Length: 454
Image (cartoon, rainbow, N blue to C red; front, side):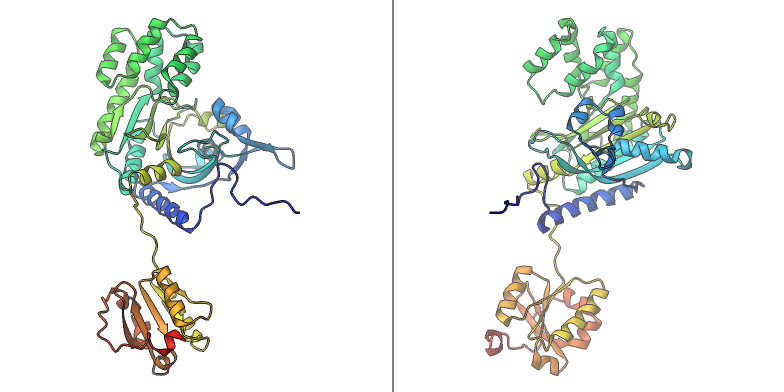
């Protein structure tokens, strides 16, 4: 016997049948609509990237999850795990030829070989919003406002989701005043990033291995739960620390109030983001019940583009994946999109009536209407059952006797009523038959007599 071909997609990836594709396209439409309303323009790049791009500045976790391999020319390449390095490469490639600031967005498919879990796949699509060339926190406020706008368009509100905001500089200031050795910062950042993902006991076992005095760690852990920005600023000033990052966050929260999204946002110093290229404000959005991973996340990465020779260019980015948001909407019972519905379904009685149906379909499609047609010859009753399954707004029957008189039958599938109408009049104003309630007051045709059952 021959080999059995697997029918399921590779583990961690997805097939998109028409119903899933409909939901995906609806989500992408929201993302594109919101991005355009905020003045972002779309870009894209190859899914296949230089592996070196991620070796330069991505975190160890991403390197371990990379789909990397040698191509047939011996070059090391990878399926992109994230979009920010590709954006940095593209900006550096054009250099000063690109007018700043840039407001770019993309909907990129990304791949990571990671452990499967709720809200986690090995491939996903991600809406990326990036602003390059703006050093002020107005950039952070803009991308956050856009992301919250998308959540609202999808049917979520402040009771459903929360945006937790921190600052890498704020944590660095806390580390300094608590006298945590700078050589250990990266390890401590990584463990803080695991809060809520691993047990406190497991985290403390790892923290103790860093040989940091436990009193300092206890103080740090207490400060990570502080929700009062003024209190954190006062703590830093009292201990002689740098409170500039706290001031930046204060200006950001004030702007978020002006944008009308302050109720979504809260201070959360334990948000650090796992990637090492973040330099300023960082943020993540969660459902308030914490049933899922982050809905979106991002932050400021002012030094990443320097690695690609683009000079000093401040930048802020946000990534919003498709997996968690769809799981969250399903859990909340929210379906923000309706299935696309056919305008008309044409049923030619026989092959003799098909040319008339085809010519009529051509005219309606040129008008932008959605028209499907029974392609296989079948009796009228089975054709009407198929029509019911497809659920068009109207069915149009091309019957021999009616066509001889220049007439067709238009059937309202919702009301179950039908009218015998002029084909010429129908083709001149087909939308009128969609808008009309069609109460069946026109001359009725015989669809339940001998013809429909033969």
